[in-house]
Each structure stands twice: as C-alpha cells, then as structure tokens.
Length: 169
Image (cartoon, rainbow, N blue to C red):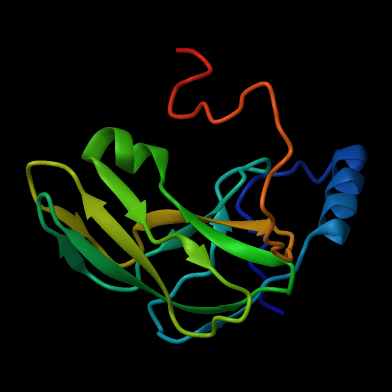
C-alpha cells in the first residue's frame, strides 16, 4: 500500500531498540492515500526521521519567471481524513538560495483534484524546475471545525485591540 509516510533515513538493522521504536512510531502514523496521475509523479518523502513536512516533487519541467509565478504539477491526488488539512509549505533552501516561495498552500480534506504547487520567484533571474526536483513540503495538520456565533461584544483582554507589532519588537 502506498502511503505518504515513507522515510528515506537509515536505521541500523542490528539495533533492536531502534527497530522497536521505529515500529512503534510507524504504528501511530496517519495514512494519507494518494494516486499517481502521471508516470513522472514521485511519492512524497520525509528528508529526515523528525522532519515536519514530506518533500513534494515536480512532475514536469518548467520555468518560474523572474519576479513571476508558476503553478507546478506534482502529478498526485491526495485523500486527507476529515479533521485534517494539508499545508503546502516552502522549502527553506529554495527560499534562501533562490528567492522561491510558495503561495496558496491549503489543501482541504474534500479536495480531489491534482495537487499543484504555486511557486513565486522573487529573484532577478528565471528559476528552472526539472522533473523530480523537490519543490515544497507537505505538512498534514489537525484542525478544529468551528461554529461561528455572532454577538454584540467580546470578552475584554489586557491586550485589547493592539495588533501589528503592538506587543513589542
């Protein structure tokens, strides 16, 4: 069964305690079902055992123009359980080295279209993306569905209406 929760780390086969811990962790992992829509699609992978997000890979060759944007195909559809959403987050290396950021990063649990990544290029030169490049991270987060209740006043707090830097530097 294909699952999003695969890892590419190394574990020593001779260390029984590490193997036991790994089995306990994997037993508690949330399963994210996915479909590969494209033969160039790659299974999301965690870069390390403690990584918060699984790397998403490009399923196409494309160019994100300087000071522009491009919606990059992953070739995947995902099925998230109710009570969770997927957050598409930037990769720190792409941001620091190439001025590449991610936009529109919410994937709802009832969305069944292709998972795409909107890349913004804040750099002065075009950014080339090749098939198989890591383009973003996918973080599965638990959420609370709320009911909204209109009222005429809210409970007061010491902070009050202070915002946008009002609590200090």
